[in-house]
Amino acid sequence: MFDISFAELMIIMIVGLIVLGPEKLPVVARTIGHLLGRAQRYVERVKSDLRAEIELDNLRKLQDTMQDNISTFKDSLNKEMSQIQQSTDISSTATSKNTDAPDAAQKITHPGIPAQGASQPESPIADPETGVAKLAANKNQHDA
Image 1 (spheres, rainbow, N blue to C red):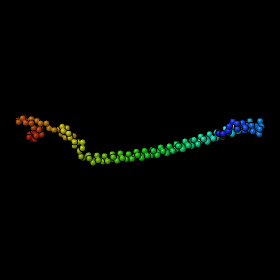
Image 2: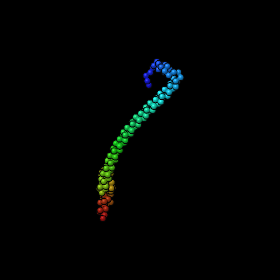
Image 3: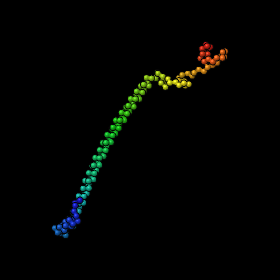
Image 4: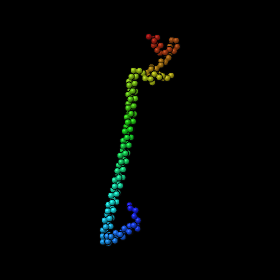
């Protein structure tokens, strides 16, 4: 606290003993001890209050930073949600406009695989009179 060496302290005690006398010196020493104790407690209390105030200030700064981060995240999330909503609205309107037209996937045909909604190809049937294979549709037309 104070930069007082042991020799300086001994000189102060000797001067105090001479000035105050042996009767009052213990009382004065006790009073000075109480005052120094109060001063140390006061200094410690002020230090702890300052530490708490600094920590509270740091927490407030952290809270502000976190709130800024949260608001930035909310804004970006809202933008993404609006983009997704717009894309789903566009796709739903496009789908509702194309309900009368056949789907593009239904138009694609592969060799040997009939398109969806198409009838099965007719199998050839042998004509009993001539022995020539004819399609069933042609036979039905001839019979009619």
